[in-house]
Length: 207
Image 1 (cartoon, rainbow, N blue to C red):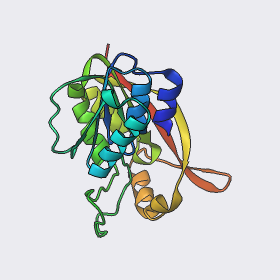
Image 2 (cartoon, one colour):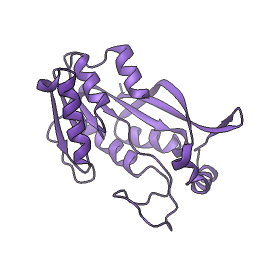
Image 3 (cartoon, rainbow, N blue to C red):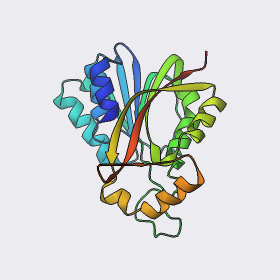
């Protein structure tokens, strides 16, 4: 809910053309529309997620301004740019010798989807546009900074929160620790519990 919390509290999106990448249930797309966005495009690789987003837009009375499309980010060719782009993408280092269990490729650094999205951002952002991107500390910050700089972008942290490992991240603990040893990725212990830090990055073009 980190990205949603910022959208809810700040009112970002008023009068803007918006894009929600990896829309899931549509919580970000719907909030942008409730904030007064002129239009919101929501994409996700899972058609059920897109259907949920459109259904939730209808329930919240904003369906006329929210459109959805099933899209694999790696094959998607954006045809327009947007004033506001939001993304809360899957980030989990995975042992490359594990059996794949879903549609996502095994990802040693946990950054494959995030990095591809960051490379697309210069095309996605309209002049003066802003992106709000969630990033976990367990995949490191240095690579993000390099990719943004290469695209003529810069970022600042506008929110952060602590995120417990939970069963999914516990199952990849060994790989997370490998990535932490080889990069600037990290997690911390709070009250005897391992947690990662979730950062909300506000991304704009370099001035």
